[in-house]
Image (cartoon, rainbow over all chains, first blue to last red; front, side, top):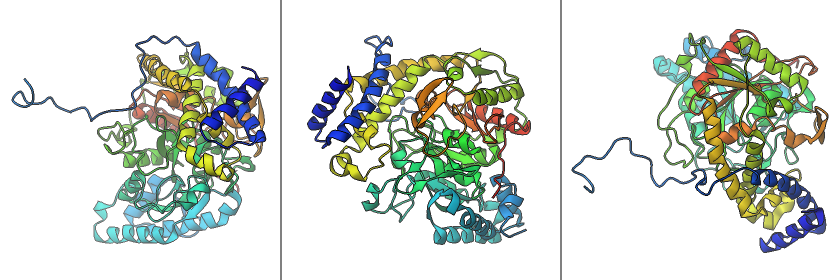
Length: 75
Length: 472
């Protein structure tokens, strides 16, 4: 993606996200995003298999410290 | 024992200060007075503080002295020790500005952050809040709203960031302990550049509740200190399980202070090569070799996928940070820090695939990094590529390559925090820096802060790592 394409992307997605940017700020943002494009490219080269899930960011409840007694809960 | 030089007479060391209070050699009020006098004498040059909580501090110090008169055996391990916090920690009754002006319209905090409560329970006395990069998005604390924080060892240079006030306050001898936060290096970078001890604990070790977030999935909190013993005392005091912080995974306290004496042999210590050597200046490599020699480390170890880890951390940081501030970026972006607002916006516009891929990569990365610790107890690398640059520096020549200075300060820290490993940063003073410090990271496996502390203690005992007084 060249500079013009990055700038076009910034202007289009900023409108989508309702972020008002004047021309100068859009150009500055595009410079930053262009640096990240390079990093995303490296990351795309990392081999990931379909079963490589997200690192966990959600836990429904703390893991119990002991197992439930046999008489309690489902058999 | 009293007067304006009291802190220095006690070695600027939290452990000695607490002992002096316990023994009755000094009162908490005298320690506080000395700290406030030092802040008064130096902070117009350093600019570490954005808020002083003098009335509260006096009440807390008086409570410690009353406790000593009533039941001295009940005094906490940090009895009477003055401390301050990065201004993203909640302080009851104060607005948590997080380095911004946008947050000034927020309501005052209704309670202290959990870690402030922990410090108070240990007897420490809160003196105020400290300068930082706005919303923690920076490594230099060149804060446009509150002014840059100056490095106490050379006032023309940066203190590092984003916990720059936390590093500078300790280096200037204002306080023996401060608290900071570290997402990509924000404790380790100022510790390195200011020449103080710093701890980034395991991700999930300490509660973050009551601190203003930056990147939920990478944020850590931790202490900085003027001695390794003080750092350990603070770390032990800060620990508690907190099921109300979804990012706090520790289920019990694992103190390190009792383990630091007499456990200093037999560690398997390696030196990180490859990416970490390539991105270190000659002085940074010298600091590493000084530490390696003192610790008897000779083997070079390759950290897996360091550049990819940094790239993934960079993308996650930008995306979560941009999303967190999206509403304010829409309505008042002109009020943001000019040095970081465009990065926040760029982060908010990143494709979802980049973020998701980075989080998926993090799982693979964790397994590869953790596998290293089957063979090694502690791994060493520099904390920053160079010593502190002059304030306002835009570009850095690093081994012949031009790097954007502000981002480059995190080159050596980001891959490590992304894996969540605990790191003690030790203050070293290699040649070639014009007398400035440059820290070394002592990295251990997740939940093994004790090993990093043992290595740190060895460096301190060998005289290789130490905090040096400033000349004003």
